[in-house]
Amino acid sequence: MKVFQKFKNGLDIGSNSFQLLWKNKKLIIYLGIPVFIKSIIDLITYNLYIDPTALKIPLFQKKPVLMLIKMTESYSWGKYILLQSISFLCLILLLLGSILLTCHVSKIIQNSIISIKETVKACRTKIPRAILWAIIVFIPLLLQNYSNNKAHYLVILAFSIWSILTAFVIQALSLDNTTIIQALKKSVLTVRSLFTQYIGAIFWIGLVTVLSITPFLILDKYIYLKYNSQILSILSYSVATLVSCIIPTAYTIAKTLLYTRYKKEQS
Image (cartoon, rainbow, N blue to C red):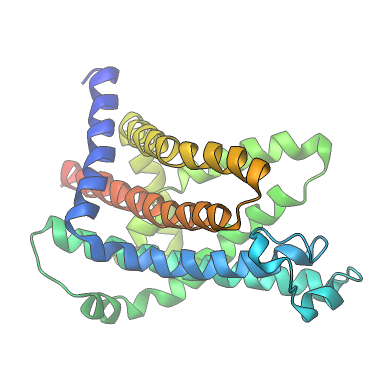
């Protein structure tokens, strides 16, 4: 199969992921809940780094939380550990949501009807592996955030390669009774086999992301700076949160479609 045809197939898979999500809107719950929780936490902990009067949404600027005022007075290991612990818990929620979403999408592909409750019940045994994978993923995230200037670009490059090679670990953990090491091997093999299709799917999803959020960013920047509109600022933040729910969901669906295709090719 020619490279262009593979890329086009990837575009189709990216498009199909949004269509599948549109037909099964409840799928957004799996990643929607973790993303919503993370957005609220980000909104609150945003001021742990800077002045508490500079919250993202102007609505909160008049009454900053007293706890945040106290926590911004100094920087300590306690604050650092607190913030990293929050980030780690959010990562666990996102990975658990991804596993549940992958399992549910797999059933849809098989034309099986399954409820969210049944999906959660069926995936309970996968929670320990999700936590273990979260620990493994969290380490390169820390390295990326806290590397020095000289090593920053090398860390970003290494992290990008790592992200591509481990793209299908969640799918392997969710759909196969496998260990972390085996899931890593299957992910690498899947990427090697379907790399061009994977890039095509990412391209389509990225294009949808840019087209959906850019108008709101432009509108927010122009009108907010000119009129200081609190309503528009809240609206823009809400749209950004909604997009943050839809895009990762579509991305996980696309990876599940690709991994299912890979398994069929290998059988």
